Length: 277
Image (cartoon, rainbow, N blue to C red; front, side):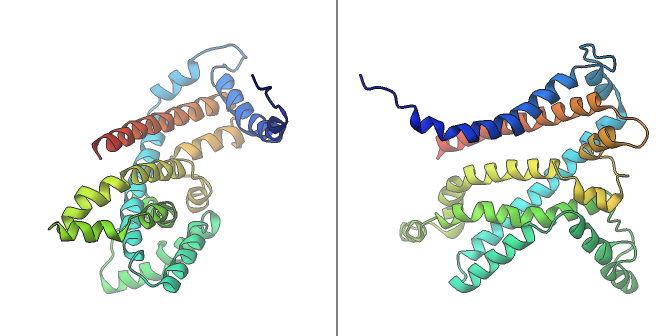
């Protein structure tokens, strides 16, 4: 029996230290503190308070609605965009991908400021459309407006995630399907979409997680006055009046549980898609 070589394992030590110190340790701290009361006793009072409070339930409702809607919009637009990029010449395609990479990183305070000066109450496009009589009730600072802003950075992120999957589609498949009498719609329904389903579902989960964790953009836009989960967590750990880190930890645990649940559902759907295809 060959002797186990421990030397390659030494390379993993810095990685394990990094994972333990910056991911596992904070996670354990959040889990423990979510079950502590103000006097340091173990209790489920924080979770009971969240479930019983309409205010916190509304925060989760707003976060899920905006995240799911913006993720679906981003996934739809990115799917159409990636399908179109496959038919664009190389240099133009590379330029579009570079532009997509830049826009996917344009988030936070600069993005909020850009939307304020363009689509705010006195934004350039808002005043123009209002003057033409085409826009009367649009509000950038409500659920619809935030969904629009989230979609801005969800679309390029989805395109960057989906493009390798679309690039893996062989032109021979479509040509072979055409020779066998299959139309374009039939090809996408029977071949293209089943092949892309795992990538589409995986991208959707990443988009939802990305939207649920967004904080800087919505805070800069609304000054923390819109009820979202990330805003509530931040206000509980850095508020000017009351600091409730244990309650913030409980909200974080529920948010993580939602993400874990969505991921498990995604894995089940991916397994089914592989089985069907």
